Amino acid sequence: MSSNSQVQNQEPTEEPTKETNQEEKEAQGEEKDAAKEEVKAEEKEKEDKNEEPKEQKNEKKEKKKEKKDEKKKDENKGSCKDFIYNPRTGEFLGRTASSWGLILLFYLVFYGFLAGMFSLTMWVMLQTLDENVPQHQDRLPSPGLVIRPHAIEIFYNRTNPSNYEQYIGELHHLLQHYNDSIQDGNDLCLVGEYTEQDKEPVKKVCQFKRSILRQCSGLPDTSFGYAEGQPCIIIKMNRVIGLKPKGDPYINCTAKRNTPLPMLYFPPEGRLDKMFFPYYGKKAHSEYVQPLVAVKLLLTKEDLDVEQMVECKVEGSDLRNSDERDKYLGRVTFRVKVSQ
Image (cartoon, rainbow, N blue to C red; front, side):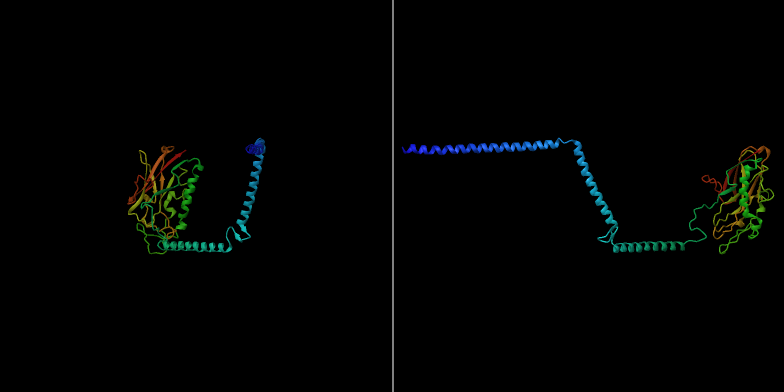
């Protein structure tokens, strides 16, 4: 009897525990369902957000960029103003007044020192130079020849004065410095002797009168023979400091043709007298007068309308006149054609 009563007493306790377990399971299931619904709701919201039109997204991005750009501009304005002048620190262009003073003082001393060194080296160098003679001369010992009129080709029509006015003008301009009235003020030097005056502070100038050129002086014939078809060509030698040509230099001209071309030389025989040498430089010998040689081409009627090639050389001395690398060393070539 007692055992039956115990069994009866145990049965009612088991039934409520089963009921509570079921209720818990139901509650847990409801919670899971609620959580799933919340997740679904969030997913729907995300989908709804993703489904927004692209234009709205782009507008939002552009607005964000504009805000950022405005912020950057404001920052840059503020930084530029502070760089030019910062009222809080008193800095101007990133430096205080004392900093500017120190750097300016440094550069003043530095560049002053450089200027002093440069001036000192220039002064020392100038003490080694001769104001009359270059320390290093790159010119050749043999001078070149030049002609006036300054043209390699002298072509003109003798019946038309406008064709040769330019040539005549050049010759008159050259010989102005050789006028007898000007040359009378220069010295009479010894013919055939070098005029050496190394120790003289003031160098004398030897006379070379225009009248020596006679028919090519432009005095008896102002056209220098161009009007009659027998033009004058004036030849001079380039200046070389200290040059003293040996021998008895003279100018000799030849025409490159089968028969010789008659010519007249002024001074006679085209002499370059030694009294005009040496030359002491532009500063010491500022009034120096170069010797000239005039050549008058005696063209005949048969020579008219025919091109004549003439070569003039310095001969009778040690001056070079046959260097193939320099066609103007001691010689000059020109062409003449007179038409009618």
